[in-house]
Image 1 (cartoon, rainbow, N blue to C red):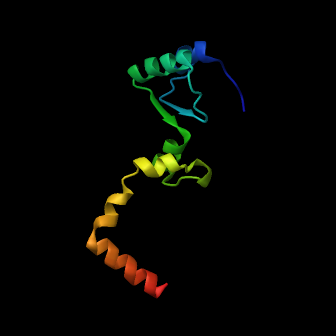
Image 2 (image 1 turned 120 degrees about the vertical axis):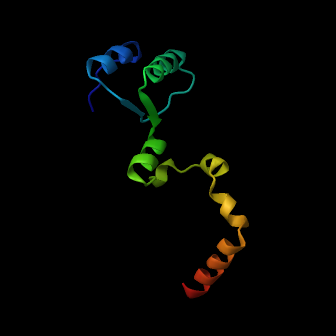
Length: 97
């Protein structure tokens, strides 16, 4: 891994290298300086992703290490649980598998 600069140089690095997307491998909490730099990038139409969202959106997969309880809290997949068609399909699949 090559480090090309710090928080102070994010704007310059994105401009010099014509970067359209930033992927945050780890999201440091409480870094006001970093948050400000990323907001400025967003205002310049540069997309900012955290690793789980990047993986899910672009690779259509989510590595297990990124699945946390909070993800299930905000996911929309639970809406299917109320559907009688969905329940019936699950019952049939459970019996056949």
